[in-house]
Length: 452
Image (cartoon, rainbow, N blue to C red; front, side, top):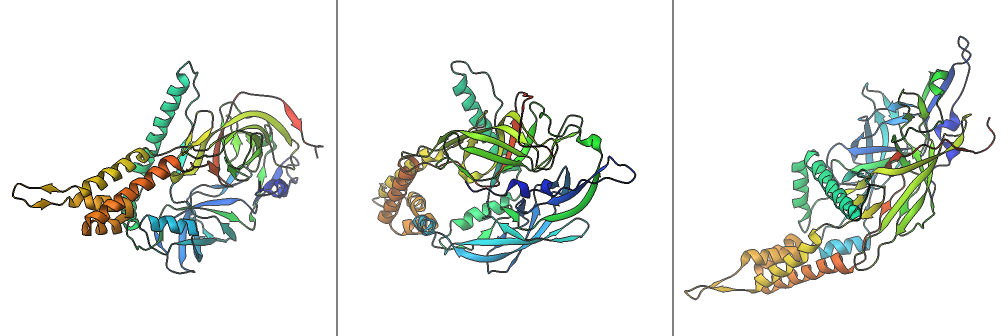
């Protein structure tokens, strides 16, 4: 697996410890955000794709830390531009045409080059930006409960209901409902403009480090550095490399980097940003035919402060994933023990039946008492629409036979994709944001080399 950043290139390898003339024990921390750290950005407004070079604006959705403090607050504005517009893959283009979309699809490659702070200060950047994600949701695991004979099934059902409730709440509370409704209608047109939605997310990976100067740190603030994390405490981290249920094997190593510091209950620093947490894959099932989806489970068993600390030892822990940021379209579900599985919308059962019913109805003609024939225009329009979008709706109204053909085509395609085709794998890209919850305490450590 590809490693995002060598550990020794993190901020903490660049920390400067010095003595103050007035307080010999006082230490100074050099606050650097190293190259490779991703800035998590969301577009401010919907942007229609026109040409390379057009400007875009986004805001930081997560703060950026250096050592133990925020150096770039959440909400900071980022300026960027569209570098180029690339053709989509042939497979994606074919699927769009089969769904009645003849738009020459393009994917926008963007970059961000400036941060604007609330006081108006501008900070230049050099970034490499990932492909945008349109609908990001935060998945949370349910609480682990004692299981009886039927407890496992009951808990899984409750977790599924809880997950659906959370997604529904996020959908209702999220701003821009009218804008999303407009986008749904436009996307159904056989030829439509292309755009980046207002909440589209990007990971803008820093290509050069950001230097925020130095700060004095009292020795008392570091007394608990590298100690055992409190039980049931939660950290924010990001994956070092991609994990995919079809590519990894049970026992494969997993690494994540803390993106926020971990403090004790009395607010002493335990692990700063850049600490490495390590673990292994405990379950990996690739997707298979007959629409059997993939499953992925991994846990963490060690955490280590960055290089350059006297406390640079591996602390043994028990920790599981308790939350993850994912693309809504992936339909992922997180269980109480941090396992992830791709799920299916219940519409896969309804769509083939509805398409077949409308296709059948479009062939049926009702004869009135006076001998006139009453065509089922609504069924013909619906049958054509299911098979080929709005273009199919228009064609269905023009020809009853054609409407039925499109309806049966739609039913067949929906049945194949929903029941016969290969399922979907669980895929966590590099830099996926995780929440990790620690379990029971373990006071043992493993040394990782001589202390400085």
